[in-house]
Image (cartoon, rainbow, N blue to C red; front, side):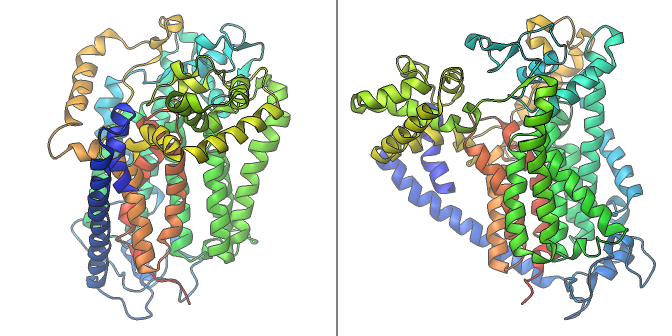
Length: 583
């Protein structure tokens, strides 16, 4: 993957074509060798580090020691550790007591998590002021406008050139749940005469919840036995890297989804750490039942806040139910709840009542449409009349080649004939898509890699949103960035644009390490060490898979991975990364 992304992807993402195919093949061999050796060295280095950690005894229970270090009564396991049966705790991870760094890292309790979230908010403070009232893209503007029923046009495909207006009140092109949340915050402050206060109230709440999720993640790493210096490093990384507060201050479905994804990832980590015992005893009132309820709620929120969230939950649930059979009911309940809400309750109950027009097919298969357009560009002389008619019924053929852009699938998919296409038309198109792909698979690969390569290699810059809703002139008098803050906001954004390419720092502002390199390291080291880490990598790799079929490269699509990557990296050095599977 990395070899192809570096050797072929750099050329393809630059102009859509390979400059020198022979040279690219040579680079592919070299990059693949380097990537393989780097992964091998990283895995062996982490294994050597783990081997040097102070053992707690061959069959000792380090979790009790962790509980004492986290402030629990001596000799007792804290409430956070109950439910882990004897013999399931991982040996070798008794943390040092009375470390000078102890007060600089949160313990896994409500007091510390809230306190350190507040500290993180203080680090973010300058961005929280400079970006008032909060950043957003045109999609969010469209969602807020929908909440003012009848005042603005509602588009089935939300771009004016498509002229796809509808009489419905809402469109589910972007998640309807997010539309309700965004609209509720703005409407709550309508009395101010603008959207600014409502938008700012939302992003402030979002920042608080995001920092709480990050603080809880660091506390969890400490609880799982990661060395305190590394825990402190993760905490400072969340505090100091500017893209975290910027996205926290962005009213965007991806920002809302991503901090929930962090919480979901922590649940999966605890399942791995306890080998599925975390929900034991859920039939009786108590901690296990509360955790199960929150596990299900988090899964449903992931499904509601982003269209791909339900698939991340579903795939992880299926694999988790197989690997950790003792908690298969928890996974089944979570997947069932998310599926019922998204595929039954919303489309058959909520949408009719709220006059919501469902999202269209082009979002799910846009990468296929892009591949077809690239085929027409490169091999139009091979397209038969039957194939032409099948493509025309779905996408429109005559101007398809002219609409193709190598790094943006939107101009192709936005002209999907949603209003006239039939099931038979779609079946014919899928047949043609498969036949043409079999003729020229390299064309399909080039069409996809041209867009997704920056998610895999070091070329994709971690971009941010610096504008607010006034990018839409129809609401520019309702939501805008005050001129009084220009002197603070513009220098900060200019600083960000400079630091992303600064020598020695640029790698921290590239999407590839967060989206691909760390998930692959988690997978490879878990396989090398026969631990539960490969299961943890499933949710990350599913999220990466959706990045690879995105219509355009933007770091917001990889935001759940960017949020989770420091936590995943920390788990490699914790008891979760060291434990072996039970025989």
